[in-house]
Image 1 (cartoon, rainbow, N blue to C red):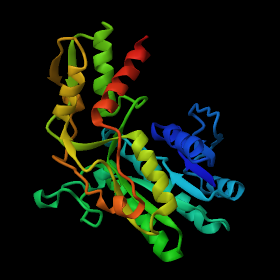
Image 2 (image 1 turned 120 degrees about the vertical axis):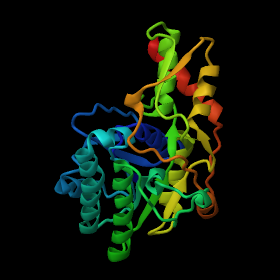
Image 3 (image 1 turned 180 degrees about the vertical axis):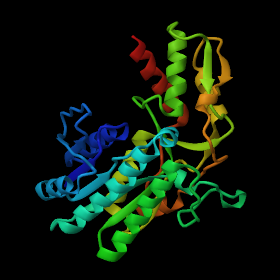
Length: 313
């Protein structure tokens, strides 16, 4: 099998490529932007501008992949508030360019569009755990763009018969994630404190929000199972099925350090709108492709903290 990973220069890409090549034996080509530095021993790396449809079409015609994973995105909720235009360009225009290119080429891959649990947005109390056909009420700009991507995927699947599956992935975490995201941010701050590079104070945003956190190594296995065995036009939740308060995550990380650490709210880390709880029902993906997460949260947190401790050295 040959797989094409669009947008492999981020957090998830290297984990996905490693699983596809090392565990499944796929031949993989991965794309990055011109500005990104990405080298992979186990995959071919090519530059791609997701906003240039002809570039995408040429790539598809040359690669003739069986499976395509669309990871290219501006994936930070916090940054989407700061740069909504870029978020719309990459997440919506980039997606439509990809879908148009796939429609026009002869060899059409099975496609997995990576969305987000943030799409569900303002969830009512009786809707948790939330199922895939629940009404979406995006509560931030990133979520709105990902919800639009999901709708585009369904439209292109229905209108043109393209073999497209959609994912709503909930928070995925692990070593090597940028501190733009909450778990990596907490772990980096603890490592900085332990090394004496930061005062023994962790700066935080909203700690009351409850989110579902899954190890990225479990998540990429879900992606591989879905692109191979998912049903055309369907959307699948990917998560653990259990939300946990950000406060509890922070407590677990601080407990892994021998330092006495104070916690302070930083107004700059607070979002204009924050959904109180997002928790998925994952029975659909379990039933249809036999996936469920295996790596315990405590293991992921510890390995993420160890990653940042090594970075300090």
